[in-house]
Image (tube, rainbow, N blue to C red; front, top):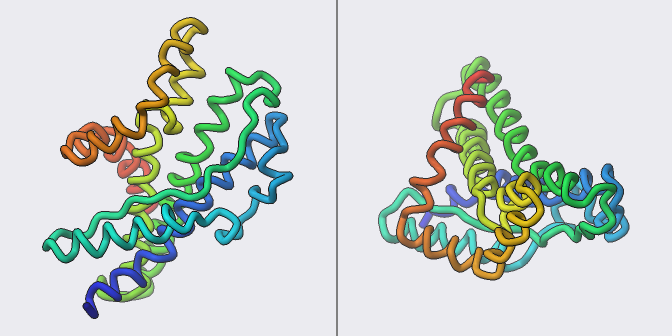
Length: 216
C-alpha cells in the first residue's frame, strides 16, 4: 500500500497537467481561429481546476492504477478532462481550422514531455539519483504525455486524430468518415481491452520518444 501511495504522488501532477492543459490548448487555438466559446466559458486557463472531470481526471485513473497494481502490473493510467467547448461553425474556415484546433492538444502533450525531459536532464546533471522523487516524477511526466499524445493522435473520431483526418479528407469522404464517431469510443475500448490499441500506438510513441530524446 505504501508503494501504491508513492506511485500516486509521483504521477498525480503529470497526469493532472497532462490531461487539463491538453484541453486548454484546444480552447486557446480555437480562439486564435475565431471561436471564443472556450474563452468565454473560462476554459482557456492554466488552472487545472477549471478542466477537472471528477470521473475522468480522478476516479478512472485511480481505479486503473489500483487495479493494475494489485494484479501485479506496472500500473496503467488513462483518463480525460472536461472537453473544451468548441463551436466548429464559428471558426474562420471550419473544416481547415479544425485541424489546428485538434492538433493543439497532442502538441501540448509533446511540449510537456519535452519540458519534463529538460527537468530530468537538469536533475541528473545536479546529481539526483533514479530513486529521487523528482526524477521519478519527471520520468512519469515524459511517459504520461507521450501516451496522451499518441492516444489522441489515433485516427478515430472523436479523438483529435479523427478530427485531423476529417479536416484533411475531401468533403464527401470526410463526412462519410465522420459517421464512425458515434461508435468511436466503443471501438477504442474494445481495442484497448484486447491489447490491440497499444500495438497500433507504437509508431506514434516511438516518434514522440525520438523527439524527446533530443532533450535528454
